Length: 123
Image (cartoon, rainbow, N blue to C red; front, side, top):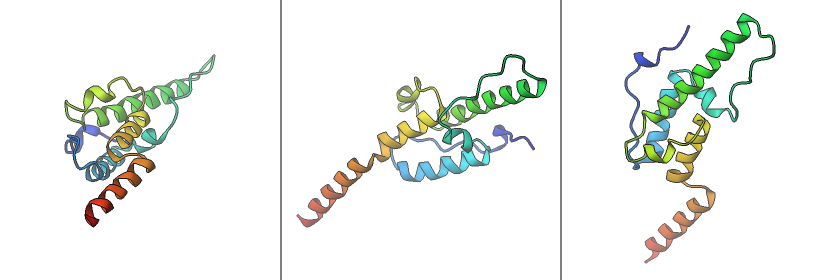
């Protein structure tokens, strides 16, 4: 059964606050749209072979469409203030990783936040 992105409620919009809660909600939304595997992929769909069959062409077009639908889910799930930061990214995975890095942080920034909170608490 083909998923219909338009049959779901609108995606939760990320404004730059409460990333953790938004990430859970948008991940579930994208999974419900059946595009999460596209977000996890590191590469674009494979190019068509030299003499493709009709099935290969259909499959390729479907994979390309899923790529753009996953990007659309993420684009529509961020505020206008966040959108310019992700507009130049080419894949849903790049968008997801950028948002995670920027608003959740990497291991080092998380450790620094913990140290700062601990220091603040002790004072």
